[in-house]
Image (cartoon, rainbow over all chains, first blue to last red; front, side, top):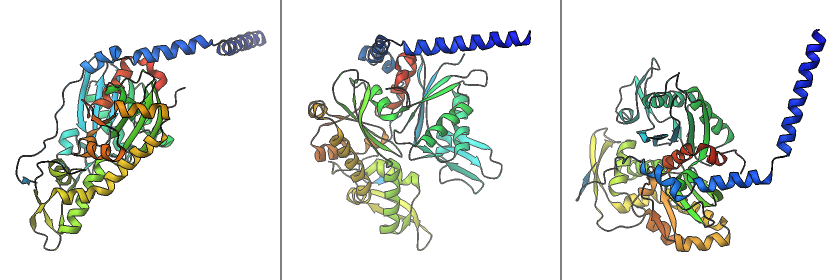
Length: 71
Length: 334
């Protein structure tokens, strides 16, 4: 009984590994193209506008007064 | 569920961008500790005000130098406290994108990601500061044209050529605006015989520091401790003296920009003459620096509209479009 269970588990593991390897090998070039396209689209000015609009103005450092600055 | 975060973990300041909200924190990267008990007394702006003004049992430190972690444990505690301030708890663990100098080593990268994970992040990925700066400064890096960005931070200065979402050429030196402060401190000590603190040196830089002569220059009265008598003393410092004091640091930054230009492919080089280079980072605010780089490279230099926030805004954009842009993380497939 135990031997049968171990055998079934081993078969399942082998099938999963073979399936994963096959899927990795069958990765189509169009996947890479689509991924690159998505990256470029996400970097477009339109896509970035929303992020830029979310900036909160921060304090700028003081540049001193006229005349001799006291430090 | 916590909102994901982008962190610009700078030598001088730490900025945090929260997904869907924007910049939620902008504080100096300083932590004040009780030397005897190790207890944290203050972080950020409050700790920065303590630098050089603490009694013996308190120490106010910057746990990053040259863009890298110098004290892992203190950095982790500082990140943990900063994350707590933006709502991260042990039950809400966000994904985090952290901007780091491109020149840091594998060990230093691991230290940053480990510190962020131990401070409460569910996952931590790194992105090069010049790339984040180019995204945040709204440069058209999605196009096949040469975009050049010069990021001058507290501890590092990096110049990168970016086209089609990738870095084409890169040059980094571990020199930044803190080295300018240190050069001023050394000059005043050597030439005027008075000791000044790092905050005073920074104030001199902001008040009269410049990389090239500028109109309307003023002298500055500098107060410190006379090294001979030990008494408080005031001296007058001229802009020419400050330029002389910081010349080595400025030359080193300009030289790295020139090296990066020389690495760029010719097709992209010609773009710089038309489009110019973009200056970001707090160090880029030094008066006359843009003019000095422009004079020595003969390429126009423009200041970004958001010099201090460009890096975190760029990383924030990556966190907003995480799935599409995760290929830009350091170590990811290019």
